[in-house]
Length: 123
Image (cartoon, rainbow, N blue to C red; front, side, top):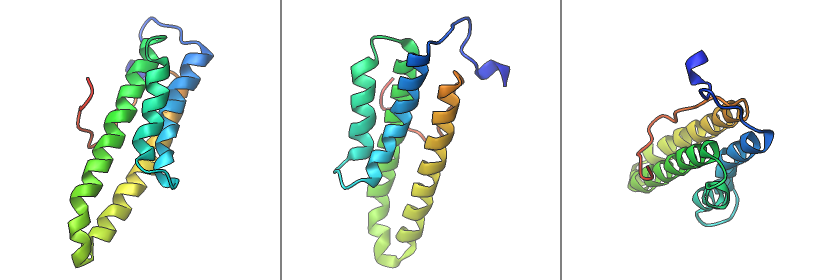
């Protein structure tokens, strides 16, 4: 796992905390805020992306993951008419919760995490 650590860079506690917050703000999708899962990470990322490459990298990863999950949910909605869609959305939300927790923990330790099933919208 040594290759996951950020090379030759000592990250400040502030950088690690903001990177973690970029991931944790994805939980806003579970609040009654329209598109909260995208707006939360967007606000965290845009407000601090110029201060640190680490925050920029984690903000992009979080944005791409949350946009991908939103797209997958939109594509699955028609399947709810044949019941299987509810199961698939439940699986996506479980994946989202697990991945956000893992990404948050890893970013707070200064380690990289690659979200699964992510479309690279923002590069």
